[in-house]
Amino acid sequence: MKLTPPLLLDTLPDDGQPGIATAHVRQRLQSRGMETAWLKSVLRALQRLENDGLARSERQGRHLYWWRRPGAGGMGARRRMGLGEALALRMLDVAARAYQLPWVVRSELRPMMEAARDRLERTPLVDAHRSWEDRVAVLDEGMSRIPPRVDAEVAEVVSMALFKTLRLSLRYLGGKGRLRDRQDARQTLVEPLGWVSRNRLHYLVARKADTGELRHYRIDRIQAAELERPFFYPGDFSLKRHVEDEAAFDYPGLGSKAPVTLKFERPYGLHLLETPVNDTQVVVADTARHITVRFEAWDSERLLWWVRGFGPHVEVLAPAGLRETLRRDAQLAARLYASGKPR
Image (cartoon, one colour):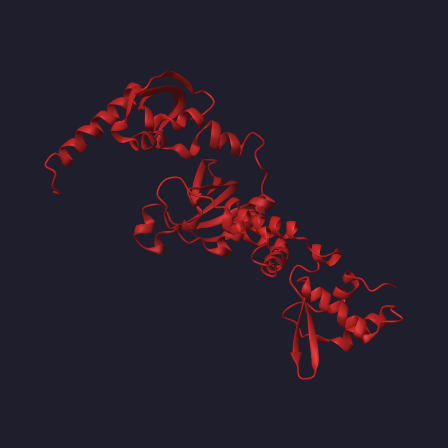
């Protein structure tokens, strides 16, 4: 029987358990059918595993004691984890926090993620794999804000319910209640349909079990969550359609699409030539001073906030309601700053 990494790793205890001395590793190998397992050969094989980030050792008196590192029983047990694999797992770990892989899946991946992090940390700083994480970044739109704390246990229960199609019993603190006392949280039974992350806030899309009403629950406002019995996921519900076509997270608004025509000062509208608002955008006029675009969009607060951000550098030509709102805003702003001094 050949002394292979999987066979050797199988003799080692996991981190957190009592370690095993080199001689004891040799005895275990012999008990499993290795006729010629020399102590020095076993020691060299263990040191190779340690160099590959799959095992660790600790000297206690005259003896070296050994443990299997987290993740070594999975991908690493078959062969040494390559730098490409370690980097891919590391970036997946970053993406998992952003895109909310189910907690049950993340817990299974965690040992491999830790092994990948250790593999990269053992790599010289000059290696591109080691430095890649410091060369990429993901930014939020608008002003950066510190997100509210999400209770890890609550998030895990919510994720599990969504993953296994189970009802949830929630103690939920509504928008007004969060400003008062945590005792204002109300108990409600819901059927989870989706998880949406937007601007560093996380929402549970669910329908109320008693009325069937579709609601959005901020996960950081959930005080407690308990798993209940299974339910049938509605075949006519699509989270993608709910978010994109129905623009459910663009509320409040009139709930309808409308043609929008905006006339930008050229420097402020130039980016729309490279990054259109959506597939309906067309350039109506492109001159030395102005760029006018037309597109369809949901009549929503999100659209209003976006247009407001350009201030006096954009003119709303249509729709009339949006133009009137911006006209009133401009009048109020003019009165506010007319004196040049703070009130």
